[in-house]
Image (cartoon, rainbow, N blue to C red; front, side, top):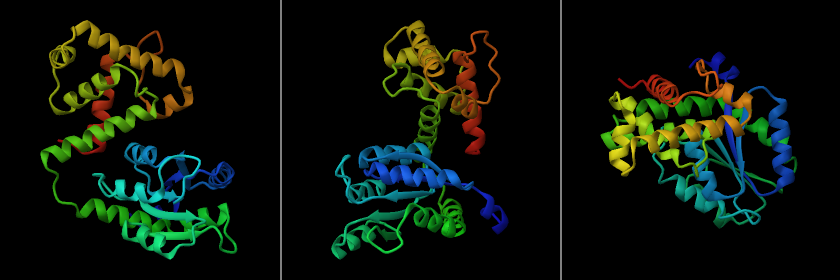
Length: 269
């Protein structure tokens, strides 16, 4: 990517922070600029790892001490090192901690930069402008990571595809508690790999259910997402034409849309 495109490209950020006031300040300043997208906020290190896999942010702003949430920044860094991601996010520590031993531990676990909250001039503006200043290098490094990776093994390839399916389903609000979630994930994956005329039949055999119950669970999960989530978010993330007079994709429309989208995005032959 050339420098001009990098200057205009949006950079995505995940915020892991337990101070509500600071979260609001960072969100407000990020909203005031046109090239920083705060894709998620959490005060829990375990949830942060799930969000990294779902949203694949370019940058993670990480508070080391999550007293009002769960876990801590060092546990997040340890968990991050064990994930199989297409590229590693740039990690910026934001903390009140003054321990050099803790800082060294964070660096050894993969932290890229540390912004101490006690430093003169620290503010939400300072943090977001630091991200904007380093954006060209971060985006360039991300592309180099993706280009230099060796070919994926079959298991790595499956993991990558399923990870992307999970991300897409999360974006439109398919609930993790929905019975049809696993069925939809399997159906989309199978359609990417080798489309079958009767998807539900194969899933019924795998899960020991009837074809009808599998189809019903998948359609119910889709219906619930369209009934309970923000219409603008749905339109932004599901761009296919909906032919049903109910205003909700049918099960097969939904499965084939995401199979085609993910196959094209990941350049799967």
